[in-house]
Amino acid sequence: MMAGTMTEQPVTYQQVTVSEAAGDTDATARAQPVPDVSRTNATAPELMAAWSETFLAPIMARMAEQETTIREQAETIGELRARLAVQQP
Image (cartoon, rainbow, N blue to C red; front, side, top):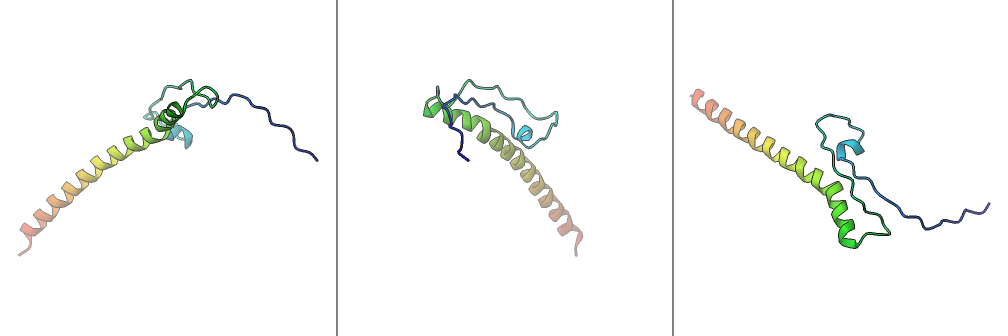
């Protein structure tokens, strides 16, 4: 059996959030605009920008959220340790 011949066809990409890509339909997910970028009409910087917006921006936003959570938890731990130190003889 012979494989079919592949033809060059423009390929376009649709940006989705990480949550959408994972199948999460949570209402808190942010919608991103879909750029008009395809392999045939985009320059390398445009493709890199589209990739960054698609993958890096959501990751960096999540990291910022986690940084805030971790800082708050560390402050709580410090406060609890201070209270415990005062209560122990």
